Image (tube, rainbow over all chains, first blue to last red):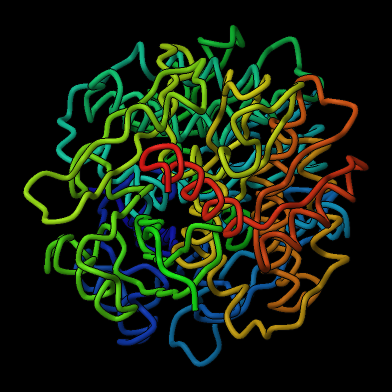
Length: 304
Length: 304
């Protein structure tokens, strides 16, 4: 077995992922847990990290590169932001060392768009972007990164020009759990109602202003026509994703289409949604992207 | 003091309002409580009503007219729906008697729009509409009835032609309490930030597709520019109301403008919102409207 060269950590709001990586970029060990920023605050970030480092047998002097909410103000050590237009190489240059540790631990900064008319922030996605584009990217791209807070990013070469965050995932959770629509989705089974999803995407994409009415139709459809809970869930999801696409695709779309950075079910849903509105996508796994980005950072910082 | 002729009750999901009324339509007594449909299910609708009738000293034989969620499937007695296009006089004709009571108690039906592409239902608002328009209305009107589930109604004479429900109020509650934006509004004082509200209305009205991004800007604006909690709250509210107006005003607007049926803070906010997008409104109090509608129903049914 080859020797570990560094440890890469994607530390989000609600999830923690760690990889032990060798000089060639191979993964030698891996950890996942729900000890995200929120949960880690109590036991302390250092203690949580140390327990996972021990679990993968990371040597005492091995350096650790971290991205995500661990660098937020409420996180471990605030890692600030690089402002747009942001060169991805600048992110590495502004990695913040965690003080008082026996090993070299650095946290990557986020990106801020300091535009009074469209203020925005990202933290974690900049590292995925690095993994997707690398530091010598050429040409323009529009990158869609779905999630709790979906990001749509316009890049030129290896520079993030502009971006916008959509609360799509969090709206889905709040609406399907905390409103009258929770009754409409109660008891939904795992079966996907792809037709319901696609027609909801199309409806919201065509008349985005109607979003709050399309959502209520989920209830009316059930009251008047006995629509099923699984179809209700797909309609809520399709309405919110269709609304996001209407805004994200409003600008100029590169001929090559959209780069979609997502995994699992979200990857499937967004691919279906883009298909519904006839926009070609190139799909890249979100987890691969962030690990690649962290590796690029580690290689640049420590020359490992 | 004149003699009571009937009792009028507006029985919603979360509120109960009762008026004791004489032959001339004067209010002799009044009750308000939070024993809406949800709370009344446990003690029983009959018991809740009886306690309030006793509190206002309603005579044993006095008839009671009810509108709202008491007539829903999960309510007291299901009162069904009149379908669109619905003549307001038809609502009176379909009042459903509550069986097994010593007095004559009737519940008014709602209105259903059985359109597979835009299914919709209302229950309670039809009685407000009756109060606003009467049974011999002439001409066309667009009526906006803001609330937990805002209704936009197109009428021709005394007929409800079409309507649409927007989950604006409920979205506001879910978003400001159950998402990351709850941190942005925490500690908001009572002061209104009218400029923040109006510019959020304008932004959502102009680019409704951007709604889920405009909401996230509430957080980014606070992180990057230190925006205040009260301004955050007004921005969420303005974004959702602007989104609703973009859909509601998308069709043809009568020259006379919009009829707004609302009370209190909602009345103030929607009036500001319509002003922001330069649409004239005629404002009518929501509570007066429902009481007038109930009185018309009582007069028609019992000739009181």
